[in-house]
Length: 447
Image: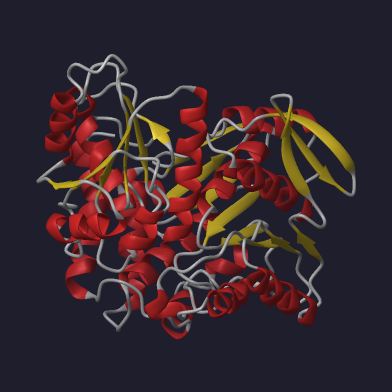
């Protein structure tokens, strides 16, 4: 896409941002009204895999897409938020091949039509963009649609799908407490709201027994055929392979291309979800999907680019958009596994928005990272001040430095390790918005 093409849809969305409130206003009334004005496109979708959860939503979406496409199926995918361009939220399926991000003119036209149908009535931009999802997916043919929840589940704008092929609930932890509740059980109840009576449900790995109990009891009450990780399906590593098991038996598969042990359970949930949705894909397609899966901004290694040149020569630089304590834990575990394989000093470059729990996030890296550098998120009005964020990291016990940019932080790290014979490992993260900023500045946006 050229810059001009990209800007056409972006300009339409910027107009909406100027007219309507930012953020979320959890209710289904406005989006239901808007969809009715559009002819209810959500009723004309292919079979839907509907995905909720605090962490792992994007990964299970990416795995499911990769497996289905490897089986020759065309797959629509909706995710949010985007990293660099609005187009990333809408991937349109292509028969017999990988789907492609929506074209700029197609997206701009859909945004205009949805805005016209709304006729200036009170609504959030996320609700308009969700209606765009349903319009695009109804007007373009595909075998399956994977739709990721934006926030929560019960009152999320995507939750107008009456009969999903399967509802998937990934790991749940504390996040968005002001919207969803201050206990994980309350958050689980909100996310369980995407379950529909009699429709299959796949429950991913849950750390909290209370969360699992809420999800299981909801599925039982609604009469949903249910698959629970650790009970009805599971996965583990054995001799450098991924062993997946469900009632069909064992499958000997390659380890997922996405790094981190937490991806074993995410891959397992995707396999189970695809099967529960009624797609009897061959094992060869599962193997190909696990080996080819891509999910930008989630434990993604920067292999060159403009920004990475500011860092130390030979440094291993990773970006990850995880931004809550649960995500911090799995990312820290991944960093620890990297350390076991190849020891390197670890430095963190972290930026966060003001709705997150920095202390809980930083605690996961205590004893693993040597120093924390904090940065602002230049594209967000909600960015935490780097000085305040550094104080949070210092409270946990880290040596900290507040900086004005990722480039500055990388430069300081380069000076610190100038004479160190072992190049460092650097993790840039704490927010998807920061990761998007980094990928754009580095010249490596998602495609």
